[in-house]
Image 1 (cartoon, one colour):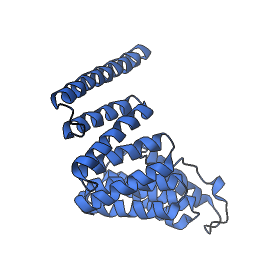
Image 2 (cartoon, helix red, strand yellow):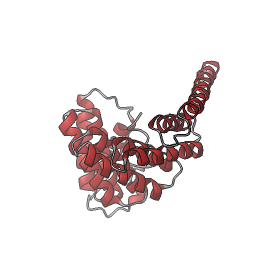
Image 3 (cartoon, helix red, strand yellow):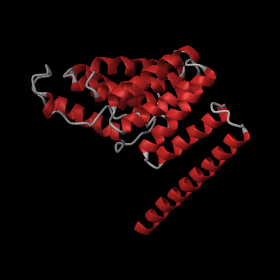
Image 4 (cartoon, one colour):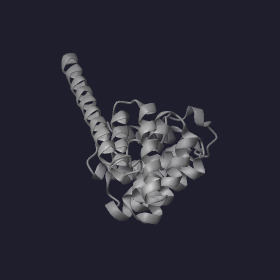
Length: 252
């Protein structure tokens, strides 16, 4: 088993290394063929793909450098309000979140969200994804009201596009419950956790799903309390590192 795990990791690393080398070769050829056109769309796209490969390799500093170059080229080529600009901003927000630079990730996600609302509309799933990521970043900064607003906006779009009985809707409800829990608003947290469990059951998700486990733990804790007015400090509630969502999760 250890040998097979090593082989899988080695194969993936070799694949990513080969892809990066090929992409870098393509970048050099395109730069030469375009005769010094510094801000060509194809060069920006190649830099963007380099950035994605570095993300997969968890080389986030290199990824950020490549993605930033791609972003600046796309701004020059398309202007600030274009889906390709939002796409690069989204990934830059993800990278900054991985580097725990949450203030900067909020800036990236907020601009990406604004661009996606203008170019794709407020009822688009890509817009909802960015809203979720912005919510996660706000939650990490303990800006819980802002996080709730982002999660609720995303949930509205998910229900509209996917229907209420969908795993993504259940996950977002669980995330909203987690934020209410952190705020000490336990009745509201319980409501969203129970709704998430109902949907997880309908879509056939098992009890070992992390969000299902979290919801069951919280509801069990609530049911054993003598009062539900929030008199018990939040530190003794079942803990969770975040809403159960991460900024990188949605795009994979």
